[in-house]
Amino acid sequence: MVCHPFHAKDAQWRFAMLQPLTPISVTRRPGCQSSPRSSISAPRLFSTTSPTRNWLVPPSGETKKSPKGRPRMRTGGSVKGTTVVWGQYGLRMVDKDRRLSAHHLRLGAETIKNKLRGMKYRLYHRVAAQIGVYTKGHEMRMGKGKGSFDYWAARVGVSKVIFELSGQVHEKVVRDAFRVAGNKMPGKYEFVKYGDPPVMGVTKLGNGVTAESLLRPRRQAPTNADRVPPNGPPVS
Image (cartoon, rainbow, N blue to C red; front, side, top):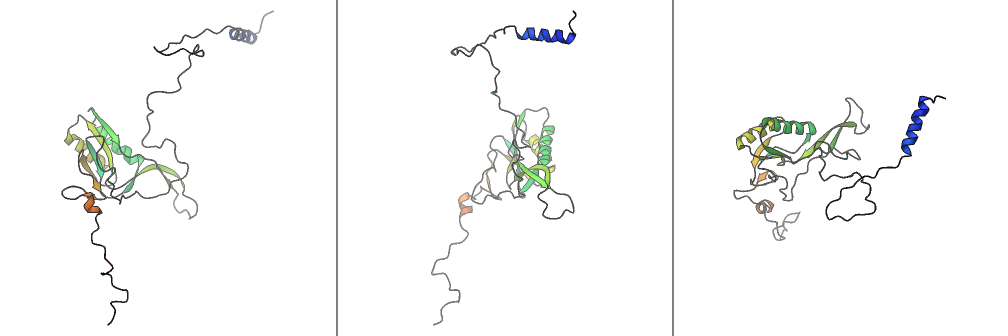
């Protein structure tokens, strides 16, 4: 009796499943204690290297649609984000706050990389596109919602540093690369270096201008003796 080819393959598979498993050798680190469950090695489910995140797309998206909003204008005397922290040179916005799209940010970063091709440097991104922008079609009536997703953007306040750079690159070369990158992005930018004074609002500190002088009131608060009644001075 000749066995059908399908039944022959099925028999071979069942015979292979009944064979005993071969133990796997485990290589332990020196100083580690053995455990009764370490006879079979298991794949590592984690890595010591940090994952590479995309600065132009948020990692988890949005749970709800973001409002249009406006960049925050720090009026309490904060100078956070206006100086170079990690690198030697930086690109800072000077005209007004605005919303930069991920396309413009990527275009500026690629321009810097093209200008500095072949040189040893490191580029830092101080802003990230994490605000969703939603648009609707033309001639659409009101009350139809925010529309569908269009692109990711970042709210950049005035005097905010966008890019920083460090490495073995001459200052004039970096200045020219930042100039070209600023021309490809909306807004006006300036070149700053590590150690330059911070900016409070739109006023640069230094040369006699301090944070205390800016926070000091421009005129003295009136006292009760200086106040005039709403109906004028009393008539004698």
